[in-house]
Length: 362
Ligand SMILES: O=C(O)CCC(=O)C(=O)O
Ligand SMILES: [Fe+2]
Image 1 (tube, rainbow, N blue to C red):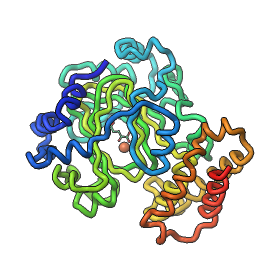
Image 2 (cartoon, rainbow, N blue to C red; image 1 turned 45 degrees about the horizontal axis):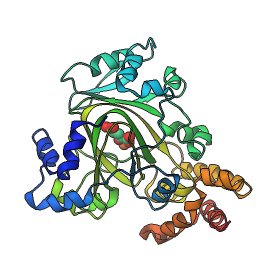
Image 3 (tube, rainbow, N blue to C red; image 1 turned 90 degrees about the vertical axis):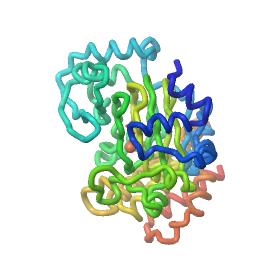
């Protein structure tokens, strides 16, 4: 099932969709002269293959799949109405923070309460923090949908808790302000649609596009279309039913819900973006590092080194599942990264690079 918003966007490469959205958020208004750049920066969905996924991760490019294997366990629940009914029938008493309206007013609701509000026409709300692990949603969503290659699930608790495998609910009109996360982001859409605008965090900051996680912001982060479209790294896409986006951790994103949305999100680090992630944390600090600065990078590298050591002796099939075919590209991309020279000496990072080099030659 494709949403109306996606069909419209396919027909005109986004100009009319952005104009329509600009009626509620004038920051989105494109100029006539932006049309060509809008069309050039649209990330089109592609058919899933492990090669495409791991190559994109290795070169820090976003990729949107039409048919990544669904994290919804029961094929019957992949029909939006069936999923909505199942979630609305929840009797779990645990509550979760829900953001209401266009600001960030919060209230805690149960899953059934969230679904009731989600179904009220015109209600504006969003939930991005409803853990799947350890709750009843484990029956609905496959907690291993990025297995085996997502290192975060086997890392020590300080890293594991950052994985944030979460169910996501939001209603049309909800905006998630420009922000970046510590890790790369995966988001699968079960129903509804969202418009994502994404750009390299530091290229954006230099051009005056704020990121609420990186600079102090009062009210909303500063954003405008012309500046956004002037960035080399600018990209936008609509994620609709059945589609899955993989967005590298270096990207700030600003997300508009177009049609009432239910999905699943997870952060990820695999061998193909281990060096990039650890180096970013070492250079820029990890956003969620609450002990020693750089401590999380060290813990992540320790976990990564263990996985890389296992992979040296693993079967070719297993190495494929972990994305080893993309490791040569990952290393080349990492070493060509402009900030590479500023990296402090870190023996574990060098060791990981060496093991990746060896793996890429097997
Ligand atoms: O879905 C949203 O509104 C925001 C999602 C997001 O920021 C994320 O998955 O990292
Ligand atoms: Fe995010």
